[in-house]
Image (cartoon, protein in one colour):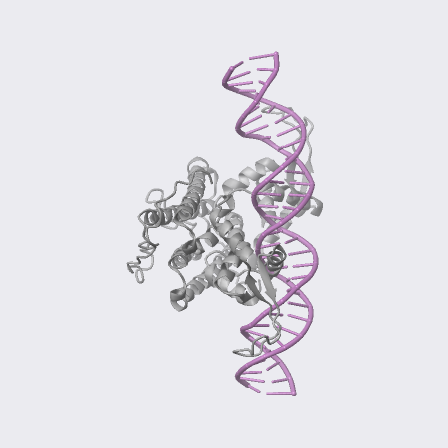
Length: 211
Length: 211
DNA sequence: GTTGCGATGTATCGGCCCGATACATCGCAC
DNA sequence: GTGCGATGTATCGGGCCGATACATCGCAAC
């Protein structure tokens, strides 16, 4: 998952590790607070040795525009890396539907074709619906076996599931009708209107036969 | 985190691995769908070699009440394990406030003293508030730099944060006033009333000086 | 009657990711 | 001039996951 995220960010601009982490934090703030360096640097090495990205240790290659920084390593995506990114974006496995995977994929939806967007949205919905059904079952069948706190946790979880399903429904409807993600939030009264319209109709859903 | 969960469940009754996993799934269904065996069995071994639990491979020790099952290993908590459980329950580190850690702790709140409950609830609230502020900052400061999808994800995440903070507020209020977790959900119109009253006042918050 | 499938049950392996930790430099305030 | 916070790269042990393997039991289809 991190691999996809890194490739996606480096597609926008070359960066060094620290910068990458910050960018990752703001873009994926919903998913995870901040990526650990203990994850980031090994992953960068992996991507480098796989040939998806190139390292470049600069020694005053350009006269530093801001300040003369220390030996930072700037990572840049390669042509193979771009292919890899496109592959990862298009194919959706089970890990695409968990919290982290879905979040990363969603972040790059503006670079994803509509058929894939719909596939992922629906896969995620299915996943959440399953969790929701599981919680409903527990509440209905084993509810009296559980203590008040556990019960309250389940209720809160169920509520979150229902809310996310509704959110996904709206997004799916919007996708089908060729609109960009608006979603009349209702949660934050301000900044809710904004009649966002972009994303041209694109080809009308090429009927994905086999994921 | 799994350690705490396992110890907690085994405190209720001895179990074998498969059963433990199912119980874990229903109790922690909100947190994670199901624990992996690749995690469960190594953890059980670890707990065993640490002396917190005892393994017991039965060979028709009792004439099987249901059917003669195969060689299952029944795990049972030891006296040291109970101490360990109490320790883990009472002490709250940073990992207590992430999704998984909080969920597990919350599940055992009925076996946690009120001061600790409040401490954990407030720690969790603080954590979520920080995430919320981060999201607000991004939305306010870098909002125009992000595409419509990323923005929508942030908005949804912010909404979830605000909702959880409100939930926590209610729980904290209830704790302070000595009521059990009721929380007028509003999400599920049924099963919302139930004037749950239990949990006697307990000692009035012993003023935790150092976590 | 056997064949085969789904639930029960234990176990390992490679790999991702995390938190803790270490170490070095830069700019700035005190 | 000194220390402190932000910037920056890197490693290590360990928790947890998914995939995989293997074995038994009960039941139903054939």
